[in-house]
Length: 294
Ligand SMILES: C[S@@+](CC[C@H](N)C(=O)[O-])C[C@H]1O[C@@H](n2cnc3c(N)ncnc32)[C@H](O)[C@@H]1O
Image (cartoon, rainbow, N blue to C red; front, side):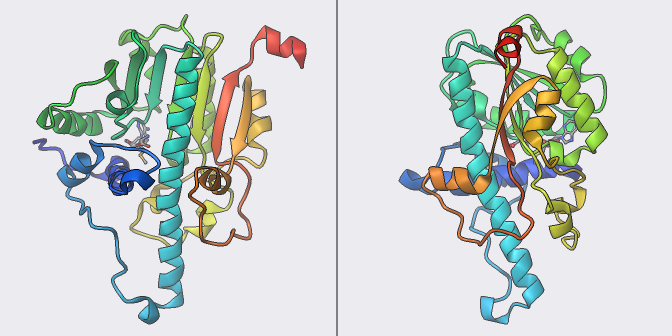
């Protein structure tokens, strides 16, 4: 087992694995199956029993109830976004894309659990510690990837394109980029730099799947000290589609709520007053052809 234990921002990746393990345990009703998620969560010291409130509902203060509802929403968002990006990756490979980059890969086990066409190369980019922890769990589980999997240990605020190219990334091949649960941890300027670099490395036919912090989320979670929300620093712009068009991408924005309903998993909480559009982004790189049509 790894001597590295989850800490700081990458501990959130193990928390995400725990939610995926709980979803996978729903059997037929599950929106996806992630057979490795439970191993990541338990190696990180997390319990797999569904989280129950410490105090019975009737004894909870209003603030405790509100916090409980917020975190139920986070679990819902992780489940829905996982399914959304699974579908996006399936669509990308069906369209012929054979190069995948998971930015801030954490405990994402898609290399192991999705059906990849032959010759698919998948790069997992994250910092060294989570990748080391992940490797130790994968070794213990004797997990075998279903594609060519390459890990790249680098901080996404540093010169990660050089590290990715050094690891064998082909900038001449169409790529599908995933940034899931990542951008909310990066300041807006760092998000802009990161997406600019993604654009520079993207050949025609490239695609992108993003999750963005919902409008108002920083304010809504501002009381939740000692939780991952304390590390959230950015939320999506008012017009995510227009913002991405400016960066060269034709994007569609979906809300978690509408995708959840589309997958047969409606969210029971009423919409927040300031709940904005988008949150889940599917984008295709603009080409001269699409420019000429528009
Ligand atoms: C909430 S987790 C999501 C992990 C994964 N994308 C998923 O959905 O399962 C956020 C991940 O982003 C990574 N991350 C955050 N900031 C980073 C940075 N500056 N450089 C590299 N990785 C970073 C963390 O290490 C962590 O693995």
